[in-house]
Length: 296
Image (cartoon, rainbow, N blue to C red):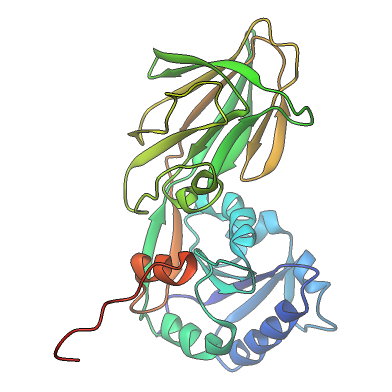
């Protein structure tokens, strides 16, 4: 007997392969003892889907499980809507790397059947919450599963800011910005900027400078429960921007502060049986396979 009776489907628009996978999912789930819900954007991808629809904001109240068809970016987009209500998510990979969406399109029926039969593992991936402070006014900007990034925005110039961790001054820096990354995000933008790969079970955050005007500024790994504060320099003439998982959420002015903390409720990411983070790294990042042995 499955734990999941109400299953939501979310698909990435503008990708022909996504529609093919959604149709396979609808055909398979239609023969199971489950209710199916499509988010309203996904419903427009399919002609006469014949199932219930809801907005993405309503998914967590209508579903026990969400299946995302797309790439890692599609998971990032859905995570902020369902994490707080502890609705688990599993991904069908129709993107590029697919660290989060690890079910292959030709294995949909097998892997989803395993999940419905209770044969799966659950990763709890924490998110970051961001608050902007301007004077005495605070704004809750949102959450990020991968990373929070302070960057110059449209201007191709360096910005200046200060970094505090748990109210302790760390440094001031002139650079293209700073990436505040979770372990989940350590294989994404942070990796491209020279940050370390962190195992997803670590309770840690990595701070990765972007092109710092210094020869000794390196990534710092800190405790995941730390409070991170970024203060835009008082004389900053540019208007830096703050992004969560690639989405610009705020344009700053001189003196603005950003507080970044770990979200109290993690995202529940479901994997098929025998999932291995290290195997994913080997296949996605081109790590070497095992060497031949004498007894092979």
